[in-house]
Figure 1 (cartoon, rainbow, N blue to C red):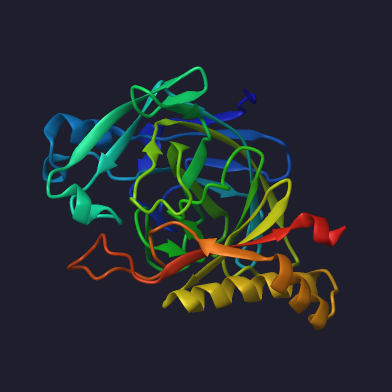
Figure 2 (cartoon, rainbow, N blue to C red):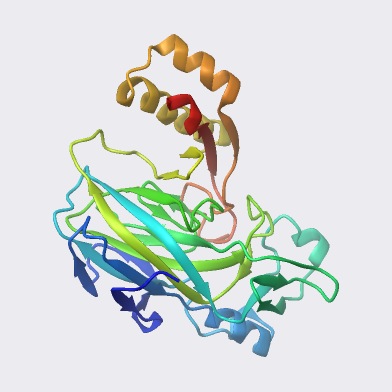
Amino acid sequence: MTATTHFLPNSLGKGAFDAGAEPVLRIKPGTGETIGFETDDAVYAQLAERGSLAEVTAQINPITGPVYVEGAAPGDTLAVTIHDIDLIDHGWSVYLPGVGALSARMGEAAMARRIPIRSDEVVLTDTLSVPVRPMIGCIGTAPAQGTGSTIMPSYSFGGNMDLTDAAPGSTVHLPVEVDGALLSIGDLHAIMARGESSFVAIEAQGTAIVSVDLIKNTSPLRAPRIETDREWIFVGLGDPVQDSITAGYEDMFDFLVRDHGWNRDDAYVVMSALAHSELGGPTGSTDPDPLHPMAAVGAVTVHRLPKSVLT
C-alpha cells in the first residue's frame, strides 16, 4: 500500500462540489505528496437496517474534501494519479425502487445485501467470488458557479461519473474552474460493471490514495479525461446521447490534431478504425427533473484511444 502523506477522514464529507466550501487541506502540486481520501457508505448500512430510503438519514454519496491546490487557476488541468484504493472488509449491493435498468423486474421493495470482501476477492453470492477491481465513482473539482451534485448529473469538472477506468494506476485529468481547483473524492466501489446500468456497483467504504499534479499553458479541457497505461479515455457529455458522443469524439480529434500535430485526415482515419465508444456511467449530463430526481437526462459516454497510435 502506498504511504500516505496526508489523511482526510470521512468526517470531512460534504454533500456537494462547492467553490464556497472551506478547504480541509492545502498542497503544492508535483511534490509527490500523497493524500488519502477516506469515504463513507453509511447510507447503505442504514438502508439495510431500516428497509426504506425514506428512513435513511445519512448523506447519500458524500465526497471528502475539498483540497486546495496551490497555483491552480481557471483554465488549468488537475492531473490526479490514483495510487491505491484500500477497502474495508465488506461492501453493499443495493436496489432502490424505480431506479436503474432493472426497476421493472425488481419491483417496489428496496434491497440491500452486505457483500464480504476477503483476500482481494468480492463474494457476490454463496457460489461466486470475483477479484476486487476497486475504482473511484465520484471525483471532481469545484464549479465556477453554484454547486454540483454528488449523485447526478456528471459535469464538465467531473462529479459522479462512475467510470471503471478511475482505478489504481490511472490518472484522471480534471478541468479547473476556480482558484485552487478544490478537489474532492467519494463513492468508492469494490467492483462495477461498465455503465452501472443497475445504478449501483458493489459500493464500499475505503480510502483512495492519490497524488496531484498541475498542468498549465495548455488548451482548457471541456470535460474530464483519463490516462491509463494503454489508453487515453475521453469523456463525452451531452443531451441527447449523440451530442455526448460527438463531444467526446471531437475532444479526441483535437487531442490528435491540435495537441499532437496530426493532420486532420490521418486523425479521421485512425479514429474510424481504432477509437471505440461506449456508454459511461448512468448519471446523465443535465440536471434531472426535480419531480424525477433519479431519472437521468442526457448521457455520459467514453471514447477510447490506444496510446500505441502515438508512438
